[in-house]
Image (cartoon, one colour):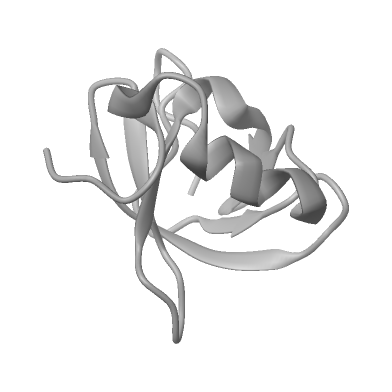
Length: 85
Protein backbone atom coordinates (compact mmCIF):
# COMPACT_ATOMS: atom_id res chain seq x y z
CA UNK A 1 0.00 0.00 0.00
CA UNK A 2 1.09 3.55 -0.56
CA UNK A 3 0.28 6.95 0.84
CA UNK A 4 -3.17 8.16 -0.05
CA UNK A 5 -3.57 11.70 -1.36
CA UNK A 6 -2.86 14.37 1.22
CA UNK A 7 -0.12 12.43 3.02
CA UNK A 8 -2.43 10.07 4.87
CA UNK A 9 -0.96 6.60 5.59
CA UNK A 10 -2.77 3.61 4.10
CA UNK A 11 -4.52 1.17 6.44
CA UNK A 12 -2.46 -2.00 6.74
CA UNK A 13 0.92 -0.36 6.06
CA UNK A 14 3.78 -1.44 8.33
CA UNK A 15 5.02 1.39 10.57
CA UNK A 16 8.71 1.75 11.46
CA UNK A 17 10.70 4.40 13.28
CA UNK A 18 13.40 6.48 11.60
CA UNK A 19 15.99 4.07 13.02
CA UNK A 20 14.19 0.96 11.71
CA UNK A 21 12.28 -0.31 14.77
CA UNK A 22 9.05 -2.06 13.70
CA UNK A 23 6.07 -0.64 15.61
CA UNK A 24 3.07 -2.35 14.03
CA UNK A 25 0.63 -1.50 11.27
CA UNK A 26 -1.72 1.35 10.46
CA UNK A 27 -5.06 0.27 11.89
CA UNK A 28 -7.21 3.33 11.30
CA UNK A 29 -6.97 6.84 9.86
CA UNK A 30 -9.16 9.76 10.94
CA UNK A 31 -8.39 13.27 9.76
CA UNK A 32 -4.73 14.02 10.38
CA UNK A 33 -4.33 11.14 12.86
CA UNK A 34 -3.54 7.48 12.35
CA UNK A 35 -3.73 4.62 14.83
CA UNK A 36 -0.79 2.23 15.17
CA UNK A 37 -1.86 -1.35 15.85
CA UNK A 38 1.05 -2.28 18.12
CA UNK A 39 1.39 -6.02 18.80
CA UNK A 40 1.34 -6.96 22.49
CA UNK A 41 0.98 -3.26 23.49
CA UNK A 42 -1.87 -0.74 23.57
CA UNK A 43 -2.67 0.86 20.22
CA UNK A 44 -1.89 4.58 19.97
CA UNK A 45 -2.45 7.56 17.70
CA UNK A 46 0.15 9.68 15.91
CA UNK A 47 -0.23 12.71 13.67
CA UNK A 48 0.41 12.40 9.95
CA UNK A 49 3.08 15.06 10.48
CA UNK A 50 5.25 12.28 11.96
CA UNK A 51 5.39 10.42 8.61
CA UNK A 52 8.72 10.83 6.81
CA UNK A 53 7.96 8.55 3.85
CA UNK A 54 5.80 5.74 2.60
CA UNK A 55 6.39 3.18 -0.14
CA UNK A 56 5.41 -0.42 -0.87
CA UNK A 57 3.17 -0.78 2.19
CA UNK A 58 5.65 0.68 4.68
CA UNK A 59 5.46 3.94 6.62
CA UNK A 60 8.71 5.35 8.02
CA UNK A 61 8.34 7.94 10.77
CA UNK A 62 10.45 11.01 11.43
CA UNK A 63 10.75 9.76 15.03
CA UNK A 64 13.41 7.44 16.42
CA UNK A 65 12.60 4.66 18.88
CA UNK A 66 13.91 6.85 21.71
CA UNK A 67 11.75 9.82 20.64
CA UNK A 68 8.55 7.82 20.19
CA UNK A 69 7.51 7.79 23.86
CA UNK A 70 7.85 11.55 24.12
CA UNK A 71 5.85 12.05 20.91
CA UNK A 72 3.01 9.91 22.25
CA UNK A 73 2.82 11.93 25.47
CA UNK A 74 3.61 15.47 24.36
CA UNK A 75 2.64 17.78 21.55
CA UNK A 76 -0.86 18.31 20.27
CA UNK A 77 -2.95 15.81 22.26
CA UNK A 78 -5.55 15.54 19.54
CA UNK A 79 -2.91 13.94 17.32
CA UNK A 80 -0.88 11.81 19.68
CA UNK A 81 -1.04 9.23 22.40
CA UNK A 82 -3.74 6.81 23.40
CA UNK A 83 -7.07 8.52 22.80
CA UNK A 84 -10.49 7.98 21.30
CA UNK A 85 -11.85 9.60 18.17
